[in-house]
Length: 225
Image 1 (cartoon, rainbow, N blue to C red):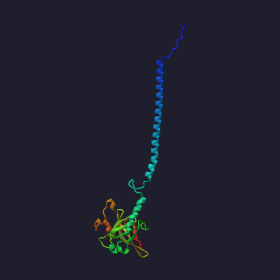
Image 2 (cartoon, rainbow, N blue to C red):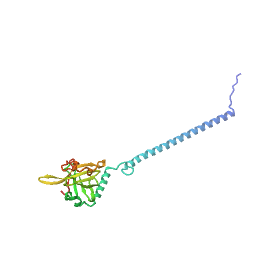
Image 3 (spheres, rainbow, N blue to C red):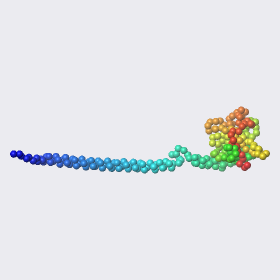
Image 4 (cartoon, rainbow, N blue to C red):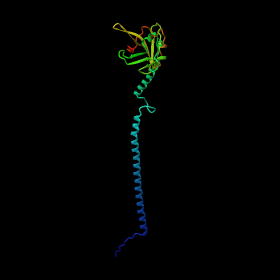
């Protein structure tokens, strides 16, 4: 005779199965919770990145709008030109040099002179002010007279932008009419450390001689002409 045995689960086994089921359910809940936290963290990280990315264009725009001041590394050319014009304007407000200060040679032509770098067309101007102050298109400067060893009209040392120009009175004959002007017989870059012409030996300096050649085409003439 064959006996069919039916295996019955014991209460202990049922309790163990329930415990394992609860553990699996708890693990599933923890996993879901962790995944949720991870998603929240990802969302927060993405939000921070988005905020950072959104702030960078604003910062870049603010930096681009910083044209000058303590945070700028350079001053725009336009502002430099405006500042230079303001400084030149202050010089123009000073009292003009008197004929006595200019001497009998330069004094007869006044204080206002046109400046031409190419010798033909006016490209600038200078004004001889009192106490050796000089106003120019390129900013303020100084002027003084320098006597030459062989006499005659002294040179006028006009210094501006760190450059000393030795101006010499000369004449141009146009249809038998003598037109007074100046040419340049010496240029010294004082800002580069070169010495002024007035420190040269009067008898050996070529620029101080009566037949000194002009330096370049620069010319100037009284503005009243």
